[in-house]
Image 1 (cartoon, protein in one colour):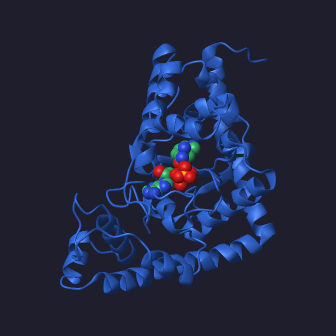
Image 2 (image 1 turned 45 degrees about the vertical axis):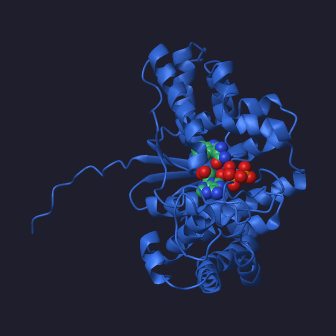
Image 3 (image 1 turned 60 degrees about the horizontal axis):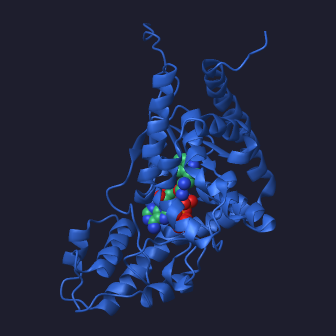
Length: 342
Ligand code: ATP
Ligand code: LTN
């Protein structure tokens, strides 16, 4: 019998992405995080070599309560897995377990200019709320280190991260140009629908886990009743048509949510609700949201309650992430002229 010729296993392109365990009031991940990022991370596992971090060092920039940070870091790792990230296929780890992130950030800090960090929208916004620390200023440089250490080809994020990704690309290009080819220059991947899920109370603002108004945000741990209530109270636009459009920001957001949760297009959703009223639309939207969130919440609690299993996943992830990150860091050290002992 003829055996097929042995082909080299194809190396798959590399994905890196991450979330902060806390970035404000600390309510956990939201449907914005799920739809804008996590859902796509899960899909991408099929075709890519995926690395997903929980960026606890980034969270330190706004001084979270230590006990809250500890809890929420594990919550986010568990939520990744509950959403469908398979630790057998993808690398899941905590940023603080891989010292190379802080080390590489230092190297890149020596390449980034004050001006390019100063113009970051997130820095400008956050430094108004919190007294601006140096960590907040250089936050996007640490983000660049996260990505470049794994030689990522693609970074799936929501719309709000576009500017940070541009900085990562610039830093990689600058370094490569100054020394020689060291870092892969990453591409950003922003989903077509759901890249910017808006607040349920103010459709001009992005839905955020740190919104002061709890009615504005649906968390992935909300109960079915909480979800139904939040949707019932979501603001709408004037008029009574279930139609999207630039003049109808609230309905556009709600219709997009309906589309994502039911796997239909906004146009099909508009057709479906033609001639129907807000109450009927909201009831169906709430059902769709509950159906999307409920299985995730259930899996989340099961994973979170099995401490030993989660611990083992993160330990294995840290080992592999350290191995991969150190390979790049050593290369960068050498190029910059840091002495390597024989
Ligand atoms: P905060 O809004 O409290 O600053 P966050 O919810 O943006 O925090 P991050 O950890 O900064 O949380 O974001 C994690 C990922 O989720 C990023 O890829 C981000 O683009 C995406 N994301 C966050 N909020 C939304 C949203 N409302 N719509 C789409 N994607 C989102
Ligand atoms: N700043 C990001 C979180 C983040 C990230 C990353 C995202 C930190 N490091 C690397 C993608 C790749 C945010 O979502 N707010």
